Image 1 (spheres, rainbow, N blue to C red):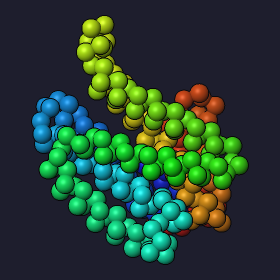
Image 2: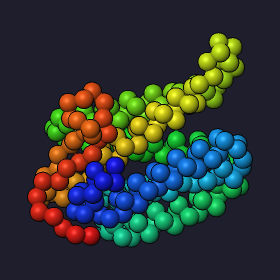
Image 3: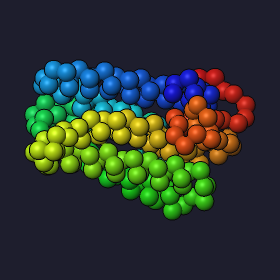
Length: 221
């Protein structure tokens, strides 16, 4: 995805590479946590997700959703997000049992933004991508909730795999969500650029890795 998004990152922000790296870090920490079931593994897994979400907010949240007192200033918003995320990181050590709920609750705000932008746009590609992203997230969250509250039921029918399904679905949801927010952001931050939604390995395949192709002159980082 870093390779596919390289032209876009050059145009928009080199911090996009950081988001991709954090996504890989989450995979490593999540694997470590589930292999060891250790407290350290849990915190590494959840804190890396927290910082990925924070990075996404800093890069792609449209200025119209910033707190009014910031006046649409992205550097100041980034500082606010960094401070909030740092405080939240330390708080995660105090009540680790609520971390997962807190992380999933952030999705409520993201869904609100996506819904507002969905109503504004007539771009069929963006609307379709948004619908797929929300559907994938809903299926992933349903798997997580089902595993949490119906674990004994799934064990009784010898199908204790709902948490595994959650991981597969949410790992697919993240790239879709990232590209969705990139397209939403481009309307505000890259009005002079034309972005084309593409899928790897082929656009015609029913399932693929989404990315954006920038049509226009290149600008180095």
